[in-house]
Image (tube, rainbow, N blue to C red; front, side, top):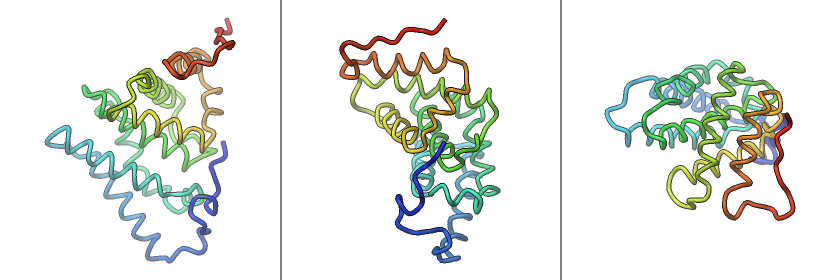
Length: 191
């Protein structure tokens, strides 16, 4: 996987960053990750934390991964935990998946999670892609965000390392939704 270069996304190299910016980024990652590990009083509060954290991650370039590897650990643990990945609210699950997609982009070409956790992420992303026909709401916007991030990082390559069934589910979901169908092309499972 190759994410876009830091210069393409920000116009700056990591070596050009002010050390105080790097320190702020590290603190923000630790605080955000620890905040996700703590119980939230409401779904809205949790969604707010996930949105802020996704926004922070979206500004990070792949070149930062060596600078913030340790600081990303609490967030990586919190995001893949059953409390978020299997939350009762679809909005929470998909928001967590959007954050995970950003972590996948940042850590490329390394996989940030074990294979079974990556499969679970792609299955969750697939459940968001199934909602693409409903072109409004949080799930739709997060599904679009996940698709964009997957395309930036080319993490579709990671999908190929996983079970073909997961890949087929995702492709079927994306291309079978109204407005995403291409006449003359049919997805056929490789059995």
